[in-house]
Length: 423
Image (tube, rainbow, N blue to C red; front, side, top):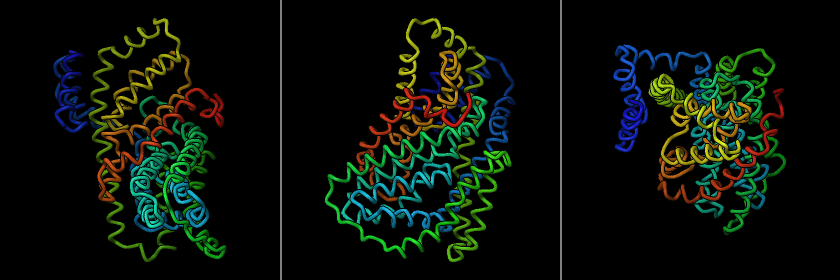
């Protein structure tokens, strides 16, 4: 029955059936045929998978990011960064990475980060002589920082699966997020030296001052969101709701021109669509994972691996390789829900800290978003900027290598993940 359910999932996936339905059909086969559960249990699993106070933070953070993008706050925030460093050699690529890191701290969404930053930075880069391929590749890769920089949707999902404290994950993601951002900045500057570009005109002190003052309300948002969580005043979910209210207030006060019904509608519709996609995948993945757990497969595999004579670091390398392979044809969400029930007990049994493993897992999910042929941010950039996904993929290759190197550093230097927490 276990093999038959897995075959159903794999065949449907290869046939191009949506991932949530492929997972759901494999799980439904186990539930109905293997466990002989009533058919009513299937919609119940879909419902219980999303019936979580923590997961309620997802639509709020998505909405906050979309409101920042469509109501103009994000563009003011990004402008001050380009004014500060855009005139330097390789300054605009570096500004793109820094902007993605900051916007990631506002939205928690990689795709929202790519679109918001790319719509402002890419036209400037191409105008100064940077290739379209490199420009798209930088933003597509740096946009994945939204997965690591808190608040992160990946951390929220990981915490909901393994029952870990999401606020600890947020806190632990700060140093790795900054480290990966620095690695990407260095890579972007090195790659830019191969291109014949014109320097951006240096902004005057007055221009920088004006753009900074205009961006100040937006720059306060991470302080309010994360400060409320770590001070113990609010939960991550309540903080996400406060973020939405805060963006609405500053947009109405300082971006009245962009505060229109049409932009509000776009923000709401995009947030609802993305939320629906995430939640329906959660339902299918939960059905699949529940049936898998019922078969005792994770427990059996854990015992088997624990009995092997391999060193823990070798087993961890194999797990990393598995994530990398899965990332070539699956999105982070199904990867997490398929693998965590199986791999999490193994990793904990090997003696690795769950928070450290969460950080490494998040870094691997960043890689999966720019790994051809099914990288999520690659397709998002391709669709929004009307360029071939091949062009975006080629541009992201140097940054893919940089992310892989950074992931190995995070794996073998665990204190970077646990610096701010007592474990």
